[in-house]
Every structure is written in structure tokens, then in C-alpha cells.
Image 1 (cartoon, rainbow, N blue to C red):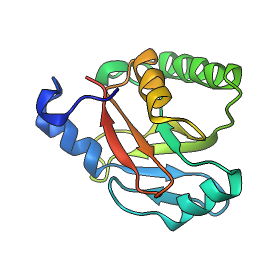
Image 2: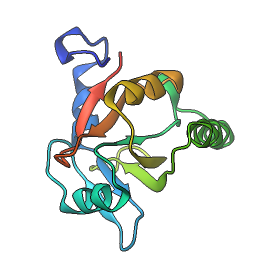
Image 3: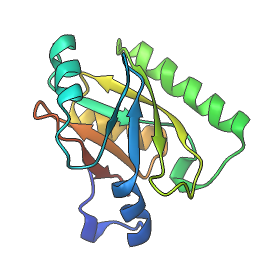
Length: 145
């Protein structure tokens, strides 16, 4: 499962950056998710897909270490292949720094993923954290380290 904030090895400023980031979903006209804020658009997407949960995930910059574009693209492709092998369909997305301090990361919103599988996928693809929402359509930051 995920790690409680007080048990995390991640620096507090990095956790805060994840909380302040904006998570842009490229579905229809597009919409943006924010940590701990209800999203009517996410609720509609979940309902439309018959899903009770979703994960916003990337494979870019494993463990928070910046990588070359080619490596990030290769890692993202492996994530897509992993999701396909599990029978999961993803919506293109992009994680963006609210302050513009770091370049956005290609990401995916994947409906129908349990919290347990979300943490498993995040760790498998070497992520510090992922964004997960249950049926309440309130995205929550799940720390993985």
C-alpha cells in the first residue's frame, strides 16, 4: 500500500510540489485535476466508463531523477504496454508544475484501477507517488516511498 506522509523518505518540499501540481487529462475538451479537490469531470468519466476508481500515473523520471527524453519515452511505452497487458484503457494526460519550475511529464489517467494495483504499478514503474481517486472523484496523493 501507500506510505503515510510521516513515514515517507521523500523531502517535504517534494511532497508539497506533488500536492500543488496540476494533473491535466486530455479527454474531450480536457480537464485538470488537483489533489484533494472534487472533480465533476472525473466523476463523469468514471461514470461513463463504469469505473469506481482511477489512477493518474507516469513512468517519467523514475524516483524523481530527471532523465533524457528518449529514456522517459521508452519508460512511458513500457507503462502503456503493462496497462494493455492488464486489459486497462488509458486516457492521455500530463502532469504539470503549478509554478512552471519543472517540465511537464507525459502521463495517463487509467479508470478502473484499485488502490492496491495503483500502488503496485507506481512501484513497478519506480514512481515516488501517484494520484488515485475512488468513486468520490477526489484525487488523492499516494506516496510510495
